[in-house]
Length: 481
Image (cartoon, rainbow, N blue to C red):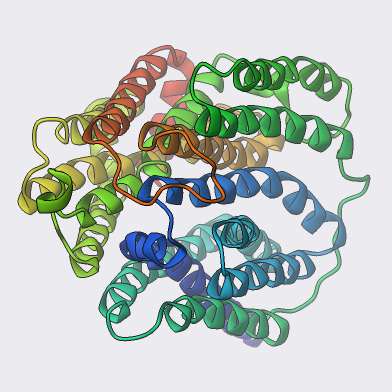
């Protein structure tokens, strides 16, 4: 009896420390968006080029999750959590004192290491509850607490930066997230027990090198498009080479006993519609946030479009979006009961498509922006909650962790590619190191919203290909999630 009470108290303490980590994560995810236009002015760059910060960060995020998650199993989750937090802190401090676009880009990329925090935290809780007899239940409840803290911190971060942007210097403003992450490192060091890893084997470094090469070539091609224009032969040659590099990567991974990415599983009829949906969904949920922020901050008297809003309104917009994200996630069991799992996912995708399509005719008033993001938020929240669970339902029991993790990875890659494409759509050609300061054309923003809407529609179509047996398994998982 006393041992059970002590175990619960110990778990409560661990979750409490990890909540601090997720508070820092939420601050990072919400803090910068309201002030990206101010960051662009500070660095003397065009609004469109802020998208490259997000693209670089998302690419790093997509690439570090699989190897760091595997490394956590090998050497211990606390050690890897400390490593990723240290890298995130370094990136945050670089961003605070960056004198130029290039330096800030490096800092933003390093900061992307934070994306592995939540998977590592869930792994720590899962292992800590192994002897309780309620491992799955306690892990789910603890994860829900962590996600709740994350969503709250996103709103707090957005409101804080919006309130402080006019009250202090940009260096001080950007230093605050760095302080939060540095404090987070101390919390992990003293608050989380260090347990050795239990897995055997090693890292699939060959697979990591090949997939990094493929993604790097594609992103490099998009950078050249930004610099030299869409008629650049070099740019499209790099994109084609990147796509071609996926062929040896797939062949290599199929020969590995412990592949970085299980391509056989991803090709299964129950997996590819879910993973493709995650990729397409990432274009809007991750790729469109900076364009929305810069559009809202643009003065219509100067550019002929925009909302002329301050950072405070962008903070409000983010807060509303996150609230509707939470509503979409919490009402998922009800939606699933009414529409079944596949119907709920398709409906959520259509809501995202509708939310971004509404931007095309309705973008002249703040109330229109709020309505548009509320609609998109409802669908996005449902997809955020449903995609990992649906992927798990379609995977063998021993591969559920990989399947759920891949929904995050494919979503991140989709967001990274979209961010790069949106940066091109919102800007004219010119050197990235010293781009011409100014506002993007309205046609660029219309392109962003159109891409997001079409991607969500394509996701809805892809989900219709989900096999009936997988959809039935997902029904049970989502109703009781």
